[in-house]
Amino acid sequence: MINLKKNDKLIVIIAVAVIIIAAIGIAAYSSPDTKINGLLGTGGNMYTVTWEEKTGSSIISEFAGKNAPYSESYIISAPTGSVCVLTNVDFQITWQDDKTIGIIFKRGLDTLTAEITSMDGESQPYEGKGGGNKTLSFRVNDMPYSDSIEAEDVNEAEQIVYNMFTGQDTTSFDVTVRVKTGEPLRRPLKYFSDKGNDFEIKVTYEYYYASLTEEGTEGTGSDGGDGSFDDLKEEEYVPPFLSMIIGTGCGRYI
Image 1 (cartoon, rainbow, N blue to C red):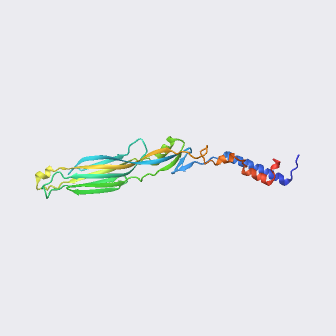
Image 2 (image 1 turned 90 degrees about the vertical axis):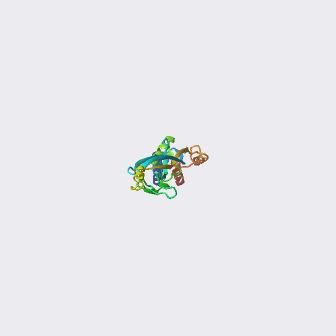
Image 3 (image 1 turned 45 degrees about the horizontal axis):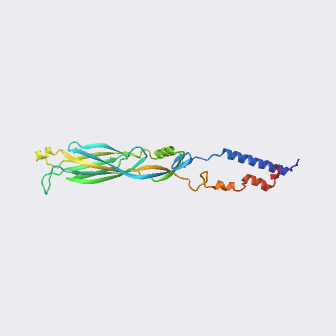
């Protein structure tokens, strides 16, 4: 039996303690969740989120009376079935006075006023006499940008994207249109026959449609990393704590 000096015994004890602590640390370690765009990714596969620009349109064709203004709340929704983000909405107001006097110099022209108000309180007015064609534009949401997210599968990736942009595919506007007829009361037949005016509002909206693509792993090692672990298999690898023991010269005792 080999007799150990007091200092050698101390070195052996420290070395064994280092090995035990290192083993416990390796066993207990677990990588933290990855935070993606303010959300916690659960790890797994990487997916690229891309956005395709699309447009939609609809028509409001109504009548505004001189004593009965048109007033409605108009809802705009991107197509359902995927994640969409509305970015811009245009209201093109077109109208023409249908009852006037005169051929060259027209009299008795109606005045049409409109006010369109968004959900966040932004309001834009319009006023025209005898007819007009005017476009009022509103910004709804910022344009989304392509990014990558981490998820276990495509279903979880879709849910993450949905949570990030939920509610941005729908908006509403309050539309009010009034008509003040231009026929004077001293011409009772003309005055009472002019009850208001037709108008048309073409609503054009821009939105972005999301799609997911799983990112490939070309040029990587079999474990999906950068191949650095494969280099360790080609030569003898000495753990840091073991090399320290060998360097102290006490490795012969264990």
